[in-house]
Amino acid sequence: MQDPFITIGRILMLVFPPFMILVPLVTALLVPRRATEDSALARQRGPLLALVAGTLLALAAWGAFVILTPRVGWAPVAALWSWPLFFPLWFGLAWPLIRAKSPQWEGAMYGAEAASGVVRTASLVNRERLSPVTRWMWAVAALASVAGVAAIAARGLMPFPFESVGSGDEAAATVQRTQWWIFLGISLMVPLGLLWLPRVLRSMLREPEPMDAAGSRDLAELYAAQRRRRVLGMFCINGVAGPLVIGGSFALATWFPNSGAIWGIIGGVGGTVLGIAGAVFGFMMTAERARIAEARARLEQTRSASAG
Image 1 (cartoon, rainbow, N blue to C red):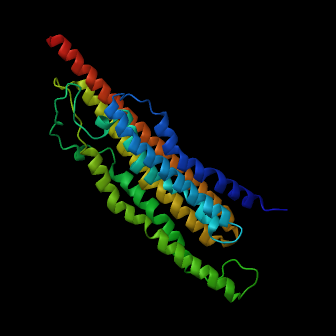
Image 2 (cartoon, rainbow, N blue to C red; image 1 turned 30 degrees about the vertical axis):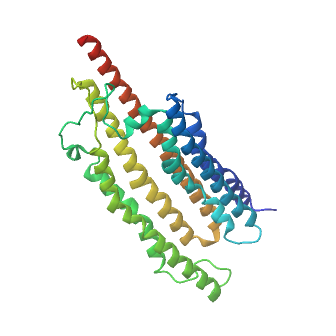
Image 3 (cartoon, helix red, strand yellow; image 1 turned 60 degrees about the horizontal axis):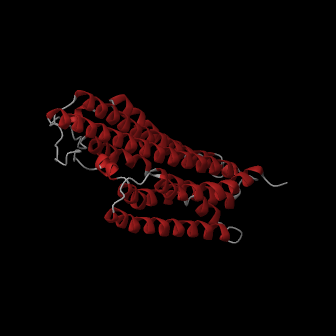
């Protein structure tokens, strides 16, 4: 009887990567087209063609690994882990098309241009001191980042092989020792995220927040609430959940090598769920920023109508 975990792994390999690869294209196509001028339509053709071509190439790469699965031992792993191709497709190709279809999203993400066309500047407030990430949160992130490394390093203090069909099996010991070195090296890259994550969060806190001419308090509160959710979400996904999934999967595979298929599935599912969560979160935050931009435009229009 076939191992059920192998069956689950094959199902994941055939379902999750193409799903993630297709998400940017499907999302961009579903975004309503609000720019209808001929020049705007012309600007949409290039990003659309690039996104379609990139999606087809990514699917072709995944398909090639799937075809090679019966003959190449590492092909199933490569096929399963082709889902991170989502990120260049999303940030590099889908977003230009989304901004071309809905210009107000571009203003929500990058610009400081109000509805009246006047360039506004953000309030000169050092928002880095208003970060919602506290010291104890950073302590949790540090613990999550080093937990997997510590667990894998501790395994090196035990004799090899730890699990084997027979004691003194030098071949099994060599395989497990090599796997241990590989997993330890990969896991050592996880704590490096603590070097760039603070810079990312600071840049998010410094992001311009264009106000209306009257400096509406309601608009400022909308920005503050959205900024807090965006920073905390980025911190939780990249500072806590990501390190735990990566480090935990490698640590389990190191300590229980005979159950490697199970941990591979768990790591693949965890990574996939994490990627989907990050994509959904990013989309929600940008959509919320777009709604704030629309609220700012309404305030400008109301002020212009009152002045007129």
